[in-house]
Length: 192
Image (cartoon, rainbow, N blue to C red; front, side):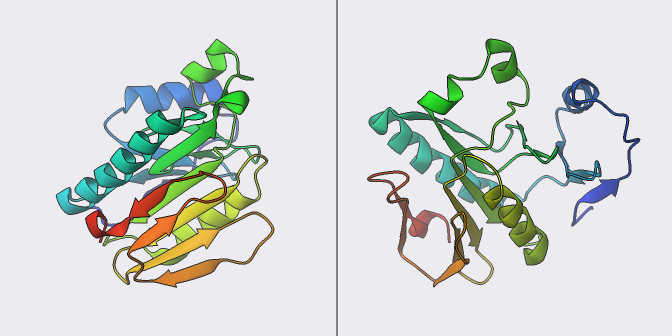
C-alpha cells in the first residue's frame, strides 16, 4: 500500500482543462499539481484520519451556516492557485464577496482562487515538511488570511498568517479562527 504521495512528471503542455479532465477520469484518487507541473497522487486516508477530517469539516460547516458570510469546501475540492498549482486542502472557506467574483464556469471547475482559510490535517503516514511547504505556498497567495496545519501525531497545531512567522500551539483544547472567522472555534477533542 502506498504510504506517501506518488509523484508523476507530466508534460508541461498539459492545460488546466486537460488536468481537470484527468482528475475527473480518476475521481477516486486525490490528485494535486504543484507549481512545477508535478502531479501527486495521494493514497486514501485511513478510517481514523477520515473520521477526524470529517469532524473538521462538520465544525467548519456548522459555523459557516450560522455565520453566512462565506462558503465552505471539503477535501475533494480543487483550487487553481496563482502559481499554477492545483491544491485540495482538507477543509477551506471563502468569503462570499470573493466567491461571487468568479463566473459560474469558474465555480464549476477548479476555481481560480485561493481560499481565505485552509486546514490541512496530517495523516499518520504524511511527512510534516511537505505539508509545511504547502502551507507556505498558500500564504503567498492573494486572498489567503489564515491556515491551520494540524499535526495529530505530535498534537501540535501550526498557525499560518500572511507575512507572519508560523505559530505553533502544543496540544491545544481549542483553536480560534479569529479575526478571520469571527466566532469560529475548532474543538480539538474530536480531532486528536
